Each structure stands twice: as C-alpha cells, then as structure tokens.
Image (cartoon, rainbow, N blue to C red; front, side):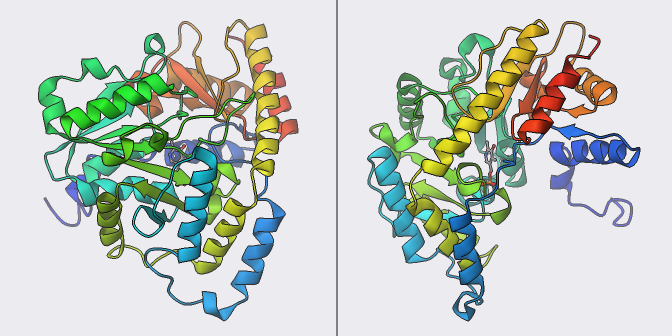
Length: 391
Ligand SMILES: *Cc1c(COP(=O)(O)O)cnc(C)c1O
C-alpha cells in the first residue's frame, strides 16, 4: 500500500472512529449554524470537583518537588490511600505495593491491558452494547474480540452459558462493567459469583471496569469485584476518580487485583507514560481520604434529574424507571426509528444531543442513551424541548 495514500497503520483501519469524536463534530456543526445545542450525549459530570481537592492541587502545583517525573508506580501515599478507600468501602484488603497501580484515568488501564496480558489471536470477551475501548483495545493488541450480547431479556447481563466452549478455551480476558455504561444496569452477587466461577473454570482474566461503583441511589451499594470470594485469583478491577469526584479532566484512576497481573500492566506502562503529575496524585489522596459526603450529594442531584427525565419520557409514552445507579438513562427508541435516525431527529428538531445505542455496539440498536450530567436548568430546558418532539 502506498505510504502517501495510506499513511496509517493497518491496525487503525480496523477501528471505527471514536463515537464521541464523530458526534462532537456534528454538534459543533450545529453550533456553528447558530443552534443552541443541549448536550446530554457524554457522561461527563457538570458538577465541579470539590473545592478541598482543587485546593490541594493548587498548593501541590506550586511545590517544585512535584514538578519532576513522578514514580511509574504512583506515590506510596496514593497506593495506601487507595487501599484504605477500598478497605473502608468494600471490606477487602489490597496490598498497596503489589496489588494497586495508579493509572492516567481508567481508560489508560483499560486500553493498555490487552497489550500487557493478551497475545495476538487470543480472544477477548467484551459486552455489547459496551464502552468501546474494550473492543478497540483488544484490536490494537491484535486480539480477536468476541461479543457477549447484553439484552433487556437478560437484564443487560451477558449470558455466560451462551459462550461456546471453543471460544471460552481461547479466551484470555473477559470485560464486565457494573454499574453499566450505557445501560445503567447493575449486577447482583449471584451474577458476579457465576462470572468469577466461569473465568476460574476457563482460566480467563476477569477485568471488571467499575467507574460507577459510587454513583448509586436510594441506599443501593454496588458490589465491587473483590467482595466475591476467589475473584482476586483471576481478577482485575478498574476504578476512576472521574465519576466519583467529578474529576474527568484530571486523568487519574487505578487498576487493582492479582499482583502478577498488576505488575505486568505496570511493566508495560513504564514503556508508555512516565507517571502521573504528582500534584494530581496529592489531590487524589485528598479526594479518597475525605469521605463520601460530596459523592452522596452529587448522587442526590443525579437522582432528582433521573426522576425528571423518567417523568418526562413516561408522559411522552415511554415506560421507564429511574435506574439504581449511573448517571445514564437507557431507553428504547420509538417505533419506526433506528437509533441513529432517532438521535438525528432529536438533534435536528429540538437541538438536544443524545447518543444512539448502536454507537456502543450492534446490540445497542433500538436504544438511546442520555446522560443527566447537564446543569439542572439545561436539563429542564432539554426535557421541555423533548415534549415538543413530533414523533
Ligand atoms: C467514564 C468511563 C471510563 C473512563 O473513565 P476515566 O476518565 O478514563 O477514568 C471507563 N469505563 C467506563 C464504562 C466509563 O463510562
């Protein structure tokens, strides 16, 4: 292939453009045309990072000790703060030296984990609909993604019995994500126990992506992976400060779990990045050590917004219940539309940006996702506009 005609690597050509980059382009176009677009398309908290965390960053940023390359493996104080947080939250002990690795947001860990743990030709099991990075990370490592469909009939949990034996035998890694993006589904203990047993039986690394573990309502407390006995023998869990503390722009999270696997990811990352800005690490320590009051208050805001969206959609003919966790609403598109057609219609007709379900995989077709991370007044305006939709 000519180098000038095809400058990119062939592995990139297997990867569709990142969904949100495409949507962002379309929204920018509308805005340039003078439309006041309300974006409910991306899961990015509108609420600010709590002030106490910002203050620690400000002070730490002024200290030259934090201006140099940070340790590849994160400050010992940060790994300890993560272990303490996990212990308080889940009653599980993690060794801060060997079982925890801070990452540049959890996307960093998720995208890179197949490069550290999976060989070309191995199978990576990924939920569909799902966070697209599970599949693209596998493709970039030369692995073969195998889709686990999530369906309403199965409460948006993968049907483990439907995974063929020959696939399970070649599978090296399985992705799960509960509370779930985009479906807002949650997993109960029974399902997680079955997933752990399945992965142990087939010698599959179970990767649980858990950035929404703290975004839950009405006293519901999502399970973390290592609350399941035996999970640490095969498991990794990915956490993030992004959603819990409204810190998406800060780029900090962690992977934790089985020590040799965490070590391999660390070994890979020493060749890719050079640690996390130390001032951000000090701020993360502050975040994790300050209790969950701010997160609970944010969840009260999301819960109120969820009720507004459910009331509005139900008045328009849907029948949805506010979810138990996450800041997403996942709902079927009206009859006669596919998901892209419906999302385009909503954007064109009332200037509200929602995400077509198919953007999360073929099994997301027929649904759309809306995020309640817009300021109250904007969300109220968006719902008022939805009432004017002619369906
Ligand atoms: C937001 C999100 C992440 C990534 O968050 P980071 O900002 O990279 O920590 C990972 N997985 C899912 C499912 C998400 O929704």
